[in-house]
Length: 158
Ligand code: FES
Image: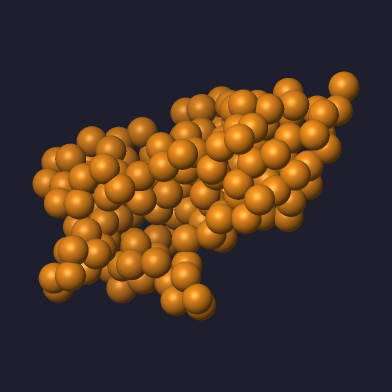
């Protein structure tokens, strides 16, 4: 049975009438038109569907939308500010950290969650945080470079 679900999506109060058992990923893509969050495995293994829920990286393919009621959800569409890319988005471009780009939104949101908790992660901490996000193109080295460089920019360094 459908219910009204209210949550904050990319900084905006959002209300949707939907079966609360539908996955957050399905609702984002099919009801709210936010197709930046990608469907990969659908089973919580690949990380391509990662979004931030209350600042924590979560796999939206396994989360019923009813569970985000009253929470804050951030997707790749909500990361830029006033038309300016988030430092992580810019760093992914600058470091050539993608080939097909399918894993990129999940990588960036996972990295964003890391940098919210730890402004100066070591390379190993970045590797550990992204370990369960799969990239079939093999761009991992560049992805780690991008997160390292974004963390420096975000701290005001270069
Ligand atoms: Fe959600 Fe793979 S699609 S983890």
